[in-house]
Length: 166
Image 1 (cartoon, rainbow, N blue to C red):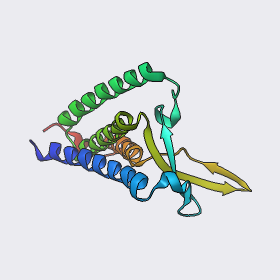
Image 2 (tube, rainbow, N blue to C red):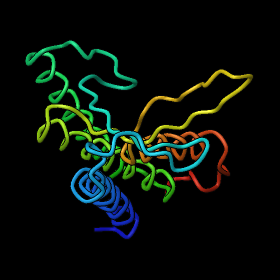
Image 3 (cartoon, rainbow, N blue to C red):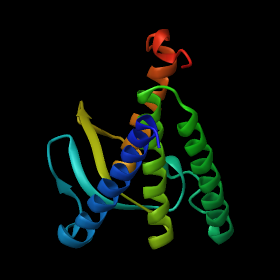
């Protein structure tokens, strides 16, 4: 295995471990389900949310057939991302793909274990007496976003010399 591919696999495994550990800790040690919403800062709360849909809660009322199709689609996507990762030529792309794969697997583990994804991070801001909140998310979601950002940077901004085939 090449050192380049190894870095992507390490990113995927580390993402999966940190994601699952954070969710288990919040549920079973911190007991977020009993505590309810916990204010951490004036703009960040911990709150337990079960997402049965996909991104931002879309398709929440799909039923068992929909959930099965969603998991099958996720499995195909993970395989395609792994092939892309194995063929990538830059460390940033490989690590970005590893983050996406690890996050996707982390959320898939939740779907298998609970029938929903465990979300817990909530950012919000108060402006003129009104509170605006972002969607509740988890570390797997953050890793997926970071991975996509890395891929965008690698393909649009990174020096072209770094992308030259070897």
